[in-house]
Image (cartoon, rainbow, N blue to C red):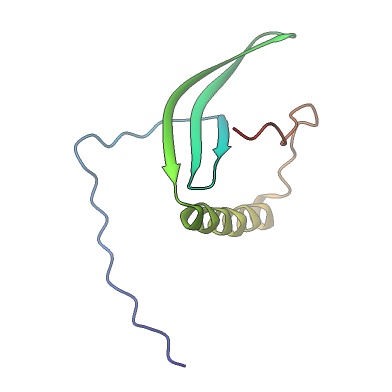
Length: 98
């Protein structure tokens, strides 16, 4: 079975395009989509963390799975080059699904 020809893709940024830094991503899932909320987390004290959300993005389940695959590939490449990325054990990656 032959693979279909890949289209030529042209990336164009619209006038509202912005780049931001996020060190917090929250994920909410329902049957129709994934909702990613990006923000910046700031530790105010040992017991207080504040997250300032600035952007929410909806993804289809198919696009979320494609994003997961490309992130896994790129994290693997990063770790092969720079070493293992260590996660803070206090930051539990599991949480409620909204």
